[in-house]
Image (cartoon, rainbow, N blue to C red; front, side, top):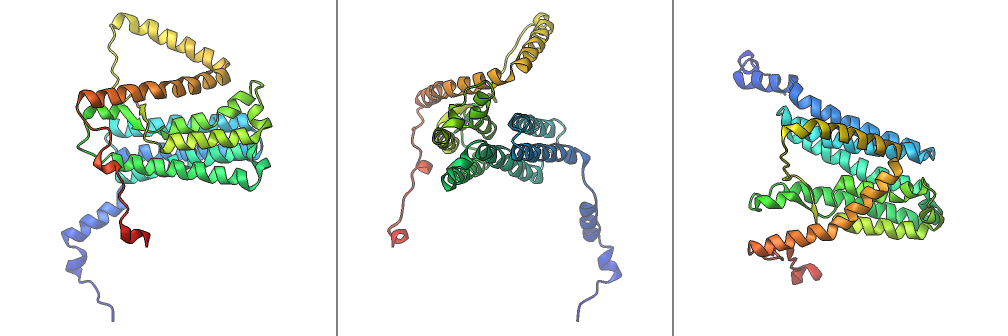
Length: 284
């Protein structure tokens, strides 16, 4: 027989606090989550356009998802609306927007001609992106890392991984179609980006970059930025291609400065946590 709660149990302070917590939702925590959900919608809409072979609009939807992804965390910190739920939702959104959606876009773009082999590289890229996001979430808990390491990511970040892997579509829109003409090249390129995503190669994050400038040049700089934005909007594909090439070119530069800083601080390049020991019992 079930045991009924007495009137005193129902009205106890602990019960009232619990029910109040379940009923109320902080607006400060709701706003960033709504932005994250909007990014999920943008990514899934990009997937719909990819189904319809409208790859230009599909790319723009992924870029919009990346923009919203960059806003939700910053707004959450600005209005003090961070939460564990929001962090988990953001990781889920990133795995779809920057892993699943771009991979399926490229599958419908050219990889479907490879059949099962094309699908294998889709799975490989998606798994690589998920593993990269899991490792990133774990690394946030490392309180012993020097402060300057926050200026670096291990491997290519999720948004830039998506930006890089869609390079064949950018090239196709300016008439360079060797990736779509030779799907095996696209397969190899996707594998390269997947390896960069899960690698431990240091890449710049830009989190600690601070630029100070006199107030007198702020207004001219804003006008210049608007002019550059207008120029990029009219030559969007060339801008995206240039961004990918610049980012790839900066990877060896970031690695050089990262390991140089390790040497200056007398920090070993290979840490104990980087060494995997396989016990003999695991091999039986």
